[in-house]
Amino acid sequence: MAEQTPSIVPSPYGAESLTVIKYRKRSLEMYPMLDSELRELISGYSSVHLAFFGAGASAFFASLTTLLTVPLSNSLSTKFFCTVLISGAFALYSGVMAAKDWLKSRNIVRQMRKETGDIVVQDEK
Image (cartoon, rainbow, N blue to C red; front, side, top):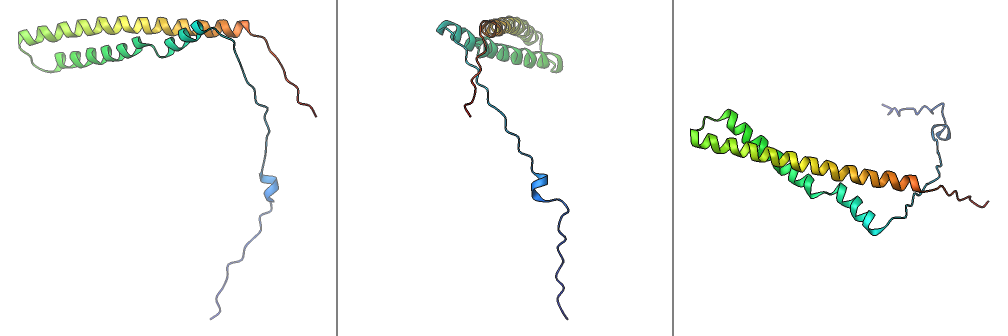
């Protein structure tokens, strides 16, 4: 018996018609800024208040869940209630301060963009 080889049917589309190449010009944005502005900008996006907010919120929810779901004695229930209040107040304060730092950083960026001008560099051909 003769072995049959599968026939290859060529595509009606060539490889060139399926390839699309788009060249885009790159843009570079540079902003002159003072060292103090840079420190304020970094502090807003990596604020220690944000870490404290995370710790306070997790302590609040963990204590609240324990208080609401586990049968506790009166003295232990009072301690967990105080923990819920303290961690909730701590989380609220830290969250407000983190939002304040973040908004301050956003204002610095907005102000820097307002103060800059556009410079266009032409390619020589």
